[in-house]
Amino acid sequence: MDYEVKECPFCGWEAGKGDMLSLHIESLHAEGQPYSEVGKAQASTSKEEEEGQYAECPIEGCDEILLLDEMDYHLELHDQEVVDMDHASLDHVSTMQEQQPHEAEGSRPGPSSSRHRSSSGHPTHRDKPSTSSSPSNSRQQSAISAWKNILNMPSSGRRSANAEKRAAASAVPGKRLGRSHLGKYAHEDRMPDWLINLLQKQGQVDQSGVIPVLEQLLQQSNTTKYAYLCHSCVHHVSRLKREGGFCGYRTIQMMTSFVIGAKFQGYQHFKKKIPSVFRIQDWIEEAWDAGINSQGRAETGGIRMTRKYIGTLEASAMFRLLEIPCETQAFRNPEPGKSETLLLEEVENYFMSGVVDPAKRIRSTDLPPIFFQHPGHSMLIVGFEKQKNGAKNLLVFDSMFSDHWSIQKLVRKQFDHIFPDMALKPYRRGTRYLHKYKAFELLRLRLPTDTIPES
Image (cartoon, rainbow, N blue to C red):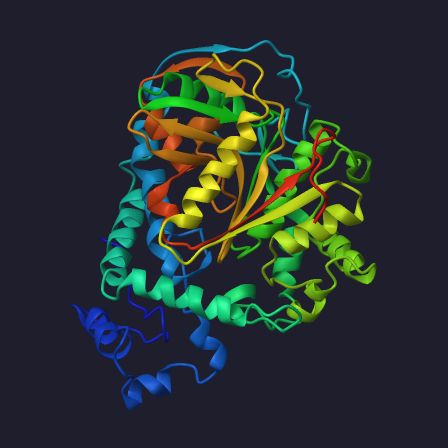
């Protein structure tokens, strides 16, 4: 039986059979139309609700709370997990050889080195067959299709533009921020006990060794003209099921995996262990106490033990407290595509500065990764790619998605992949993704050779 979406993502109204849900949304929640009296009763009267409408991802086991503006692309990545990645699984890897047991140069035996993927030290069952035809995958694809039909009704472009206008208008330093900046739980005093227990017991999902896999895939891609990659010691840290919006913390954790693995300035603070969400919260609060980016406390009302979103300013506060040199950079331009162009140029120039052999097509560097934020989400930039057709992509680790098991199987192996572009798609963020935003922020760790004053 196909999975059906029967609950309105806006007001929770439960639909019966047929097209009642679509009719309900078109009548009561379509953009640009006034709410009926019924719609007004069902919609929140809080002014904060106007800052963004949220829904829970319908895919079983995800439970991510997302702005509706982000849902379409989010579901596309789920679709990629089910379809493309199963086609790009190990059944289609023609040759694969075990690497030598020692770590790649510059990397370290991390928390998941003995069991490549770990959550609180427990092994993940990765030796599983393809499930592309399983009932659960069929249900997932049906759910994705149903939600895409729903999301296609209002104009997502207009919603995104309006959301950015609201965000820019309220971005006054020192002013208490709302849901458009801090997420659904902007006014939460304390996260639920079950979530505290989950984070304390399981920590995070942590995968090492993915950068060398990406290097081989890029080398084998017929669409890649050239590409750059950051230091190979960087881990891909991803979310636990049901945890919600901790992408800022997960991105900080990935940054710290570099600091630890490369023994970058300040690495001793971490004691060879990626810090927990709670430890990161403590450090940010301590930074505010010390007067570092202290307006963050006024803007958030405090973040300790909450699910409020954090971003580049909070990450910068933590790193500066720990005397880890860093700098931030913002790209904001109302002209369509301008911020995106400047961002891509800056990232390419950054990675170009770390190249040892420019003659190579795939250029590995020892550079740190980059903390990357746009309205509503943050992720880690681990590289840059220019394709033969002229398109440019950021190569990212997105904490919202874990590495597919077929990627995990390739860690610390030499392989030839028949479908490298399919395997690379979850790590690419190009114009199709970036064009929706007019504002971006970067946080970079400053190298000893940098002369730019700390922001």
